[in-house]
Image (tube, rainbow, N blue to C red; front, side):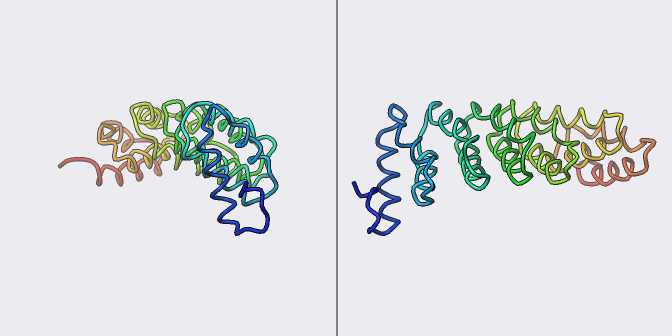
Length: 212
């Protein structure tokens, strides 16, 4: 009842809605869906906060299903929530959002995918590293730098083998950011690269990662 009253403080309305959504759980997500579509900022934000507290794939599906109908600003908020939830079920939808649209929205999608950090996140980052928009490309590089696991390590090592010098430099940078000591042999090879920038980058990373 309190969430429907306009003459009470917005903190009360927000708290009442959040509590109602969380108590209902994923077995009854009608109120969550309704609130995510609301033009009332207080109710929308309360719904997003509630979704972060909840578990289960149906909550993730509800959040991803609402994305196409949201304003860019609200879409970014929901993407951040999906990243916080860490459910890899959201990765395919977020990957689609990362490939087109306004740059801030694409960057938010990339960051959410990276925050989820699942193995399925790695190909998304790799596929966007060469994007024509520098913000999108940098977000993908930053995302790959932070995703844990062997899949991400392998992707970085593959960049060192790229026929494109700029990608080899990116790979060397990521080796350093990930503290990938196992890549030292590859860095030694890169230190003899035909491209001067690749050689310079390789020597810098060897100075930080290689043993005496």
